[in-house]
Length: 261
Ligand SMILES: C[S@@+](CC[C@H](N)C(=O)[O-])C[C@H]1O[C@@H](n2cnc3c(N)ncnc32)[C@H](O)[C@@H]1O
Image 1 (tube, helix red, strand yellow):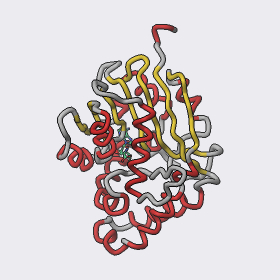
Image 2 (cartoon, rainbow, N blue to C red):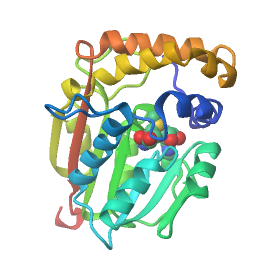
Image 3 (tube, rainbow, N blue to C red):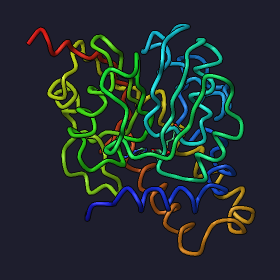
């Protein structure tokens, strides 16, 4: 697959903003259903995943969180509200930035920015999350190194994303590789913990396809021609591949202290 540029990713999210709102709601990520909580709605399960990330970051008042790939800002706003932390969210999509900024509360800032071109000085943040954003980044090691630079030593990282069980899954996305934990270590993190939560998240893909069928005529009104077919193909591929070729992981780590060598 040829590399998708940051500009293309931003344009894609601008174009599908109304479509994702109809199909996914405010958060643009899979849901997480804990054991025995299969009754949760898609949106409740999406918030559950966001809270899992928040727990992995051990957030508290006074912390400054960087949300890398913040989407509409809903996940970061939830984490800020429930943990009392400040937030800077970055996205490549102007529409997402505008949505997030329009409802930002004090202490929350949402910027149109590419992670790979950040002007923040090093050690600017206490914590960083990447919820389904790393899969858009062709240079994953470079991206993780930049997040490490932006975090203070000891600062926490949490990632939720799709990953390949074996490299080269012919996926339409740039999934995380099977050894993503090693990549995170190479980028300067320690205490890396990777949890395969595929069984707790996989039902999202069937629910998404169901919604796509149910809401098709409304979606067709707002989705640019061609994109709906592309989304449907990708969603079908994902529903088939999930649990066999593709899994979903939550990863937590903390930035090592470079001064300790
Ligand atoms: C699938 S959406 C997830 C949005 C949000 N994390 C959520 O869970 O609702 C992917 C997001 O990653 C962002 N993104 C991808 N590559 C990026 C980059 N290099 N710099 C900043 N944001 C990026 C996109 O703009 C988009 O907001």
